[in-house]
Length: 169
Picture 1 (tube, rainbow, N blue to C red):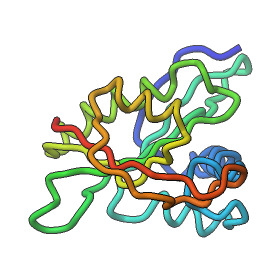
Picture 2 (cartoon, rainbow, N blue to C red):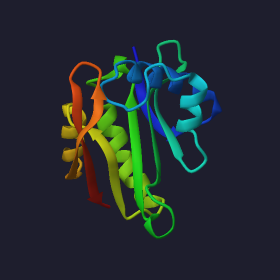
Picture 3 (tube, rainbow, N blue to C red):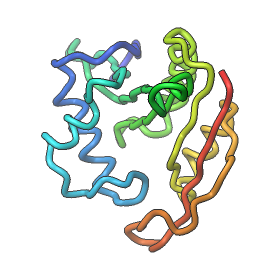
Picture 4 (spheres, helix red, strand yellow):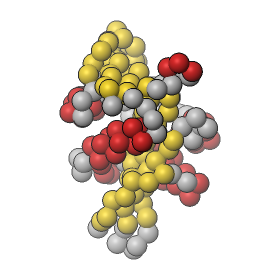
């Protein structure tokens, strides 16, 4: 039994939990561009790269140990004169799907992005067939502002479109 979800800044102790989520999410080859065979080191270096603000959603287990059930990052989408628009990426543990974790992280990230001084949020590459994510992003005010035809090599569907999504904060 889990209880008391908290969203907080990630730290070094969270790396194992974040890696497990990344490993499970990219293994499907259906939502993220990363090669399912990507190494732990490669993916954690990417997720924790210096320009990113990294967060986790965690809950306490029945053994009173903290379990990472989701993670996301925020960063400037572009440098310099474009650094007021942020970009973000989110992953939820497959075991926690359907429990509203993604929505809670998304809502938290909008407030956090404002707090960090961003004035808008843009997602550069949302796989069109990831309908749950597209619906979630639209429900928090993101709009599809462009389509990149056949931009993603989906593991089972083949060439699939990707969306660019945007909203002001």
